[in-house]
Length: 396
Image (cartoon, rainbow, N blue to C red; front, side):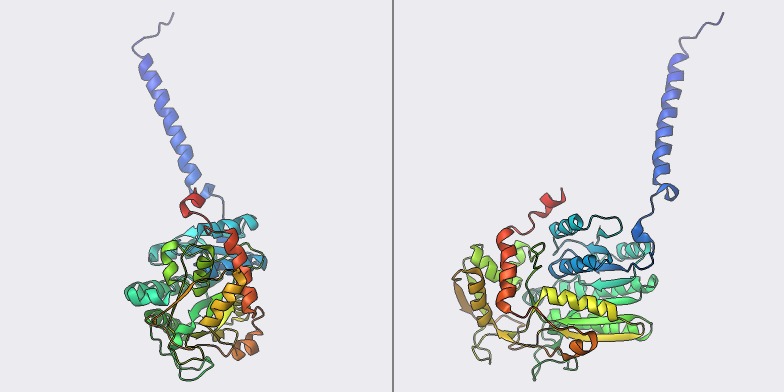
């Protein structure tokens, strides 16, 4: 007859426990190894599907571009650090396009070269739309180094990653601020570039880097120089929602809407002594829906070994005073307006000659009714008084 040794029982149980723990750990490790990892549709090329990386896709213009790309059946990866973008905009896009292989969001900073290279290494990207940038003229005069780093240096990082991973198509978001204050109007693509503020200078430097690199590669490059962007998605899904602390640097449309909503006591118009018919600055206001249409047409027409540079505007200048009156009419609010001295880095008159983009890309601005563009944007603002909501609340 066998008799169990009571002293051996604890040792046996300990061995069983250790074996169980090791088994669980092995299972967890195996699940995390590449051979057991589910292959992402974003990491493989699919015939007939163009995968576009959109930097700054959580921002105002970038999110509208993503919406259009998804509607046109592109596959989209957004890279954004949410310093200026909104996680709420991404959630709207994800809810509308939930299918596998349609849209993914990667939280990353373009200033982190390792993170950028990892994005390109792990995803089969066909083209890049590079929107990500700080973009306020007034702020650029206060924080010039930030602008050169964020715009110029980060563009270099993106180009290096594209070169390393053989991504050949770039649609670059530039600005009419690269022209500075030209002697003749309207501005054509041949107008000399003499930017007068750090924002415009940083963008021109980025353009120069792109152009120099393209000479030694077979890249397809499109550089789009925007004029003043207004409006929002006509179906009310997306809008412009800058962080509260950035409102003082933002677009005049945002300031008008904030004044109409009572968020700020009134509107401050800076500069009434310019050499223009009513003394205020003249700008070319382009609706964001038209702007993203230009991007899609540029992507469609991009060709290897070719560079396209285009002004994206309506070809018509409107004064700031005209704009304010249209905003009052669109909102139905008699906004209080204070007229102040000029803002550093501003210029008197800028409007485009869009004939080149009309001719070569078959693009024409269609949403040219200033009042209607403001009415569409105002509808979104009224329904989203707090923008997309708190970023932390939206992310939880």
